[in-house]
Structure formats: C-alpha cells, structure tokens
Amino acid sequence: MASSSRRGGDFYGAAPYRSREGLSTRQVASSDEIQLRIDPMHGDLDDEITGLHKQVKLLRNVAQEIESEAKFQNDFLNQLQMTLIKAQAGVKNNMRRLNKSIIQQGSNHVIHVVLFALLCFTIVYFWSKFSRR
Image (spheres, rainbow, N blue to C red):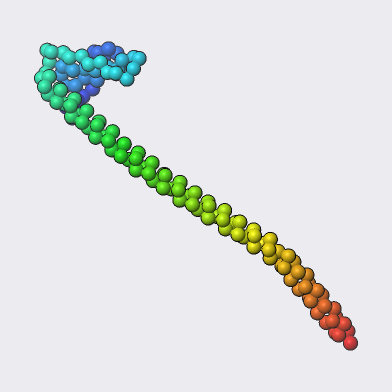
C-alpha cells in the first residue's frame, strides 16, 4: 500500500486509482467490481501483483477482525438481554408479593388508623375538658 499513489486525470474520468506504474483501476458504473487495466510498458507486474496480494491479505484480516468483534458484541447483547429478562421477572414477582401483602394487611392498617384517630380525639377532648377547670 505504501507504493501506491493517486494520479488523476488520464484514465476513465471518475477518480481513477493508479499504482506506481503499469496498473490502474476504476469503478464499474453498475456494480462493486473494479476494472483493472495493465499497461505493459511500465513497471514490474510481479511487484504489482505482490502489492495487490498484500492488500487483499490486509482486507481479509480486517474482515476477520470485524467478524470476531461482531460475534463478541452479539454474545454480549444476548447476555445483557438474558440479564434484563431475569431482572424483569424478579421485579414482577416482587410486585406480585407486595400487592398480596397490601391486600392482606390493608384492612388491618385502616382499622389501626381509625383507632389511632379515635385515641387522639379522646386525648384532645379530655385534655381540653380538664384544662378549663
């Protein structure tokens, strides 16, 4: 890749890429293919092929790294999803228990509040009765 450089203007129009000497590429309009034109007058083709081979290896390594990272991320997301499902089930179960507890003890709380209010009212009544004397 270090031996490649861009040269503009003299091939096919739309941003041609040309290596040192002899090879040039251009995008084909309707697909992802690249056309390769070899100019036998310039350069050593073996060096060009070796350079292309190194670039293909580099791209393959990058693709493998992307694949392994994607697998890692997918596994991580699956684990996170399972953790969230378990947490949601735990919260749901605790809410069910809390609602049962409130329903069972709710009437007792109302009775306690009413008795406390009556006690407070009785204390205030007797206090006001005895404080006048």
